[in-house]
Every structure is written in structure tokens, then in C-alpha cells.
Image (cartoon, rainbow, N blue to C red; front, side):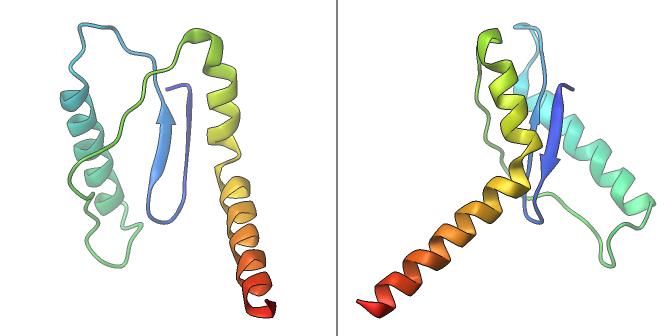
Length: 95
């Protein structure tokens, strides 16, 4: 695991994996293990469960530092996007 961060409704993580590794099996195991951990530790008031499916992207080694920065700053990036959206709503209402 090279980086991990998340929001209330999703997570981003960067891993290194061998080409022979099956991505869907890896994600299934990550979801299964983290699901059990979250429920065993009672981190949620209700039973936690991941949604079906996932998104995956591949990056070259030369982009790892940029991807890690993005993941580490995920909350700040989301807040900036929300502020930009709110600003656009205000501008639209004034027009």
C-alpha cells in the first residue's frame, strides 16, 4: 500500500501489484477483510458493507508521486471543488 485516503462515501488507494495478480480478486479480498474489520471494531452504528463494483486505474512509476499527493490531499481537493461549485451557484443566482 503506497497511499490511502477517503471521503465519507468512497476511498482511494494506490498499491503496487504484480502483473500476474488478478485485480478483481485483490479488491474482493480487500473489501472482505476491511468489511470484517470495520464491523468487528464497530466503527459504524449499523452493519457496514461495501457497494458492488470498483474503479481502477493504472499509472506509470513516473506518476506515483503525483498520484500519492492527490490521494493524500483528497479531502482538501474535494473541499476546493465544493467551494468552486458553491461559488458558481452564487454567480448563477446573481446573473
